[in-house]
Image (cartoon, rainbow, N blue to C red; front, side, top):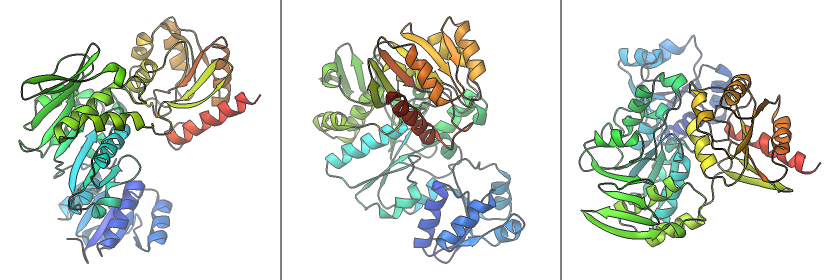
Length: 445
């Protein structure tokens, strides 16, 4: 399909590089373009492909057979519109990957918990003897592994709203929507547009495909309106088909039959939120994998760095790094999963959310908040308006010190910023490492 074809890859981040690698394996003639020309030049030199400058772009584009868009570049962007007007076929990166994948594709999306969910599903299927590639928005692009997936194997693809808003033909056989809550409103402008983008995961799915959705939030509405075979999970109430929590019981509903598949005591020590627990059990139900394997998978699961990562202890104070908490719902989830008194460190670059909502929902266990980053002053004002002790810190190091001082007699310093990291860091991982370093330095004083 791509052999000897001229293909331009637009955007040379992780997904763009993965696309370049795949296209080279498919013997395509590859061109790379990025708004930051130095990045494109570096990739051009690294892979031996053609660099396209801004001035050359129109003429090179007109000669191409395909344009591959990296996540974050809209199908309505000037580049995509120009390509389509010239008759050049435009594909988002995940569709390039899908077109070269011989195995079965499962896709996962959601506001929070996507990365954990794809890893859990991958582990579950591997325990069941399947060949699996976990990829997508998890930092390992679909394109980088797509042609390595065996015919009887599985690609478990994490998909973001930025990726899903550009899909045209993407068609997984199973889609899992972990949750849908306000996020990226600086990009999508409204919750309705954000929900629409997330709905793209099912755009081409039909009655032979299966979708699993969260019955407790906006995911339910998305799933309800689909043509797929529908399953749900819930931590709060009974579902028509799927898995839910009923008091101490974990219950499955399948073809109208209700049966208990576990107890809350079975999952009390797992290192992932209850939402992910019931979602994985629902995947096991749909995929006809034993619940015993699912519980084994959950017990063995270790969270990714920067996701409720235990950093260490000084005296009576625990330190937890949740730098991946980049929105309000993620931070509230982190608080729900932290016992006892909490000193919360938050702040960074706003994503268009209403942060008064965050402070209005904080439990009494929050003894103080220490705010950092671009919106620190705003967050401190909102926290104090909600009756919460708050202060501004000019660095992560000072934030750790001030937060620690408020829980000296016992508690947790929780670093869950509820914001993007781009005001001061390349990404949430770099921000998380800054927190870990600050804790380490403070612990050795």
